[in-house]
Amino acid sequence: MSTRANRILLVLPSLERGGGERVLLQLARSFLEAGREVHLAVLLGGGPLRCEVPDAVVLHELVDAGYARGFALARKALPRLASLIRSIRPDAVLSTMTGTNLLAAWACSQAHTNAHVVLREAASLVNTKSVLKRQMMRWLYRRADALIAVSEGVAEDLRCLGLAKNRIHIVHNPIDADRLRRLASLEPPATVDRKFPYVVSLGRLVEQKDQRTLLRAYAMSALRETHRLVIVGDGDLRADLERLAYELGIADRVWLTGAMDNPYPILARASLHVLSSRWEGYPNVLLEALALGVPVVSTDCPYGPRELLDGGRYGRLIPVADPAALAQAMVAEIAQPSRDVDHVVAFHRPRTIAFRYLALLDDGPRGHAS
Image 1 (tube, rainbow, N blue to C red):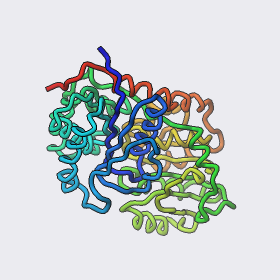
Image 2: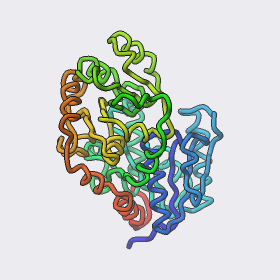
Image 3: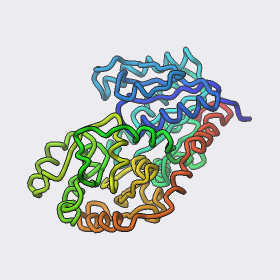
């Protein structure tokens, strides 16, 4: 018999800028609207998204900002998370991101809680190269009552780990189009010259996002004469990308803005958004662009873009790491944008997605698989 989860604990690694963090904050808002009591445990305190935590959410920062990350953080946060679970006695626990999922499942086991435990997996197993970490997923994910995969590809990865198929549920990410439009209505930062039309790409400057291919595609495209290229995000590869832009002769046409708390004014004014990733889970940034009326081009990477864009119906798909194909697709999508994209946004409404989450969080009976 199903039991209503009146008190829900959400678990995040931090409140840094990221898709998983934004999704859980959106879910927190939706759960509050549904009349639930919401607690949010973040392993590491602080972070630029802290100001976006709703006032009605009870925030628990387990470890002070500035503490070391990785195993040291996990070791310090684990007993505190278990103690918190024993203290607030949630009806349901929802965690996201692989490392945090492992910690949350372990903490729930230590706390001997009857809470319904749901783990949201948003990453391809390409992200999890460690054999030990995959083995821990096989062991600890079995202790969850339900597993949420953000795309069919991620669900298949979980099945390949030997996890029970009947406990794996595909639930896509929510997108609050009205809230995005309010954020986008603010003035863009002065670092972006509004005199020129531009193509934009939002994402961390890391190997996964493969902005090198984007730079090469832009350099060989006719767009270098008509549009600037704006890359929003920061990461370890920034210096490499700046050097490549210089070598390609496009340094004066490319703006690397760094990370932004509110990138939506820039996104909303773009002629096109490009996702050049080598792998994903279910890329929120494509949804955000479509919600703001910005056409998109994406690599057909594992996983998410093909599913989200309905095989290319709502935005052009190109092979991974193919600059020539990307250059051609960018020009074509600006000249003739994909249509009927409102259907995609409607399918990801926060209330619709939150209802699916709550159905799993409310589900019973309590007790975890061994």
